[in-house]
Image (cartoon, rainbow, N blue to C red; front, top):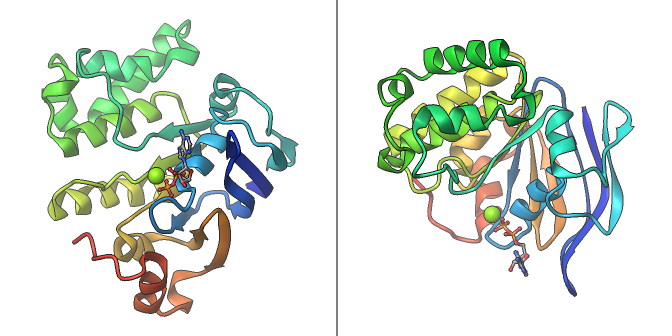
Length: 239
Ligand SMILES: Nc1ncnc2c1ncn2[C@@H]1O[C@H](COP(=O)(O)OP(=O)(O)O)[C@@H](O)[C@H]1O
Ligand SMILES: [Mg+2]
């Protein structure tokens, strides 16, 4: 369990997170909703150790991890699937995947086994293993981003808007993958614009607005349409 308490993160003088508290429960899918500019990506980067919180605490199974640097956070099993995928376009699919195991690069046998597992999970990546990642479709690049994260052997996956810009049928596929990972016992923290889909899959959700968590709960216990209306202030559904 990751317990986030009263986290403040700023860009210079601009406060982006103004005291964020939430729990990411073991083995569950926790979803973070909220309008553009709310601070969702900032929270992911703060958990990942890429941005440094000005104040607050983040405890992983009771151990303070606020202040650790990004590679140490990965070493604790917290791995990010970044917004806009950020695959290396001029590297092959295989090399992109291997890059995900950088923190364990000395464990050649383990890396080879994990690579085989990821290629087993994503047959389309196996077919394209020798292709440059830049030649993949958006959906395939998203699978690659997930596969690369899996190569780091995550306990907790932080996913920033994995469905953005993808066709509805591909979004379905991405959510099926997310649901499958959750069913396998991974802990997932998902930031999503596609709130309908997210609420269908989530065990727990939070709403972030202007750097504050303003609401949280269990999806089945709230009126989804009303919540989405509130979260996106009339923003159109993504699908
Ligand atoms: N590099 C940056 N420098 C200054 N302000 C930033 C930077 N990145 C994000 N912000 C600001 O921080 C706030 C939160 O942004 P972000 O975390 O990207 O929101 P979200 O992911 O919810 O759309 C916004 O007001 C945004 O303009
Ligand atoms: Mg964002």
